[in-house]
Length: 264
Image 1: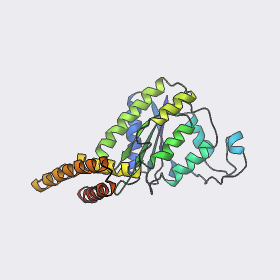
Image 2: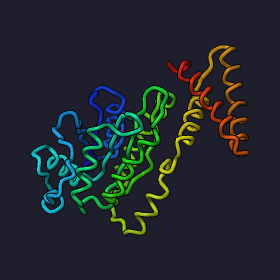
Image 3: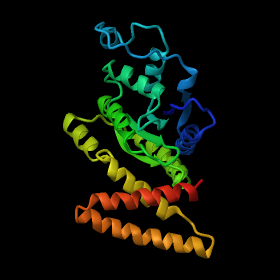
Image 4: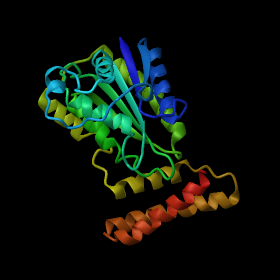
């Protein structure tokens, strides 16, 4: 049994890489062989959306690059972990290129393959759930047995490290009893994945909640700040329930702006 982790960041020492290594360690502790794959070490030429059907019929692109090697790695895995940094509410360019080219190959070898995706957003955390859409779409089109992804920001990085390790263990456990998904099961699974249908406002509310929940005050003034944030979160929830979104969004923006400074 082999579980592979794909790192879509050009930074081999960054957070995406660290989370993949933690997930692979979790899988290894269950008894899996593991391998980390860094897309930055591979040549992936962008898909040209050509009419040549070699990718469909022969499993290879008209361009000579490392797609066949990466595709084989995916197809022969018993479990898969993919992590990408978030750039402008999307996965990295190398990750998206892999997704778009692999989907076009229409392989059936990945049906039921357990998979976990991790999206790592810097700065304010914006885009952390929006970037899950291309990740989830990739998993769905290849018929993976996906477990819900999770947003990674500076506000919840400690929890993310723990989740990554546990997620790797879960993927390895699922790999032991892999089974294919029929079309109905595939639809039901992907429809219910967490964060899949989040709007931009839903995402901002999530970020604000992560800030408030994970801020650990060490002084009296900081305790007052956390109390104020908690009160404001309650007020914001009431405003949203009364469809007073503009005023609620102002509260969201203020908490996130102040939180960025506190978590700098």
